[in-house]
Length: 209
Image 1: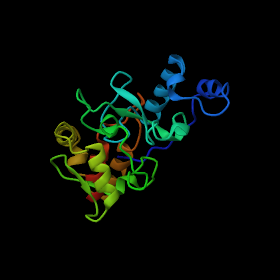
Image 2: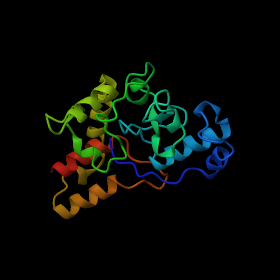
Image 3: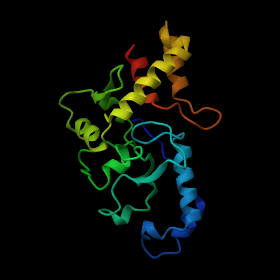
């Protein structure tokens, strides 16, 4: 998980919501506005999942309600409550689809928290763990999103070793200045508007030194 800086909600969606007195149900949003909303979320996240940081597109993701819309209908179209999440594979094995309506506001770590990444550490086999063994929120978040699903661990491990193989600087960062340059690289959205998948793991090892 990495910090997501929310940008502006699509103007067309804002205009559509203004037609209603109060908050319209999410299910009533027209397909055109829904596509614009999803595309906006994908763009601001650099086409990576809000929870696992895996690569996503319009075809294999969904609009995720951090506060479930069944329990918080007044937030169902609140832009700050919306993210783009992967579908967790064929059987919804992790992230937003796995979380579904399970939610504890006091425990689940949000991608909107600037220090959200600091709650977690990784090993070279792709497993994600609480940075602090007594961090109840990190433990809950990993469990409720199933962030150690076998397919996720495998994907992280493969991404880590592929990055090492492709980038000599990553294998031998050398000086602190060079390490900071690499950190900036993995924090930058590429020219095609996409983030590097599973960069939360790569950034962790870079900062670890």
